[in-house]
Image (cartoon, rainbow, N blue to C red; front, side):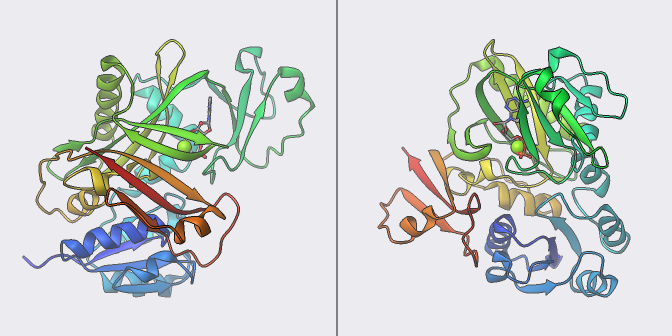
Length: 346
Ligand code: ADP
Ligand code: MG
């Protein structure tokens, strides 16, 4: 069989890393992005610039490829449905629809009997209980890297807020965080799964700062987080790499925070720590290629390079166990992920 041509919607750094992984195993990539200056333009075989609701661009895209995946979840659902009618999209648009909305996502996780933080959807007639404070107000859609979120300390503070209910919001109870971890797995067409060990994540200003393996967590959390992730993926009949973000509280209780139906920032170290990265595994799963048993080669830490910091990193000399990735973004912006550094350990 000839390798399928893979279409990827979205052109950020995750798209770039998917293209690089695809190249390694001889899969041709076409990126479809609404940003003319997409970083992934530097790494794909073909680049299509267009608005996601432009049918002529959708046809140009679907005519150049055999299969489709995506590098971010905020693609209009209508676009995904149109594309999926022409060429198979994985993960499936129905899964993306759930993860596009924090309320649907949390309701889904709870319907599986898994724990999330306490949350409430804000409506005109909402009756807020003081148990939600201190809390965190989040827009249901389009949030990332802490955008669309604000911490509310008390019910008094909340009652003074003017919330525009033209948008959808949830209020979530703030967890006393001991740790944040994430689990990435890749599920294949035949239902088989490769799963990475949990990653330990530290956030600064609600943006991921560092990830390390091994995570310093007890065996119970390690096993439970993997079991929950597998359960979620099986219920969704998921195909591709999936990331589940978790909170661990002061009492060592586990909560699902959110899911990312794609490769994830916390998995960047897998490029250097494992025989097969989250990116290659994703490509193998969505293209229905061979599954290769996963092996860890090194422990590792990853540091995100945010905003201006990139200037320093561009001018450094690196040791042989250090791997610097420059996302080649055309503009430096505050709080924007510009690159990362992975350090492997024996
Ligand atoms: P995003 O889509 O921006 O990643 P998250 O819901 O993952 O949104 O929130 C970003 C970060 O903010 C989390 O990784 C965590 O550090 C902090 N945070 C979010 N919700 C809570 C919560 N309920 N309790 C404690 N910390 C939280
Ligand atoms: Mg998050």
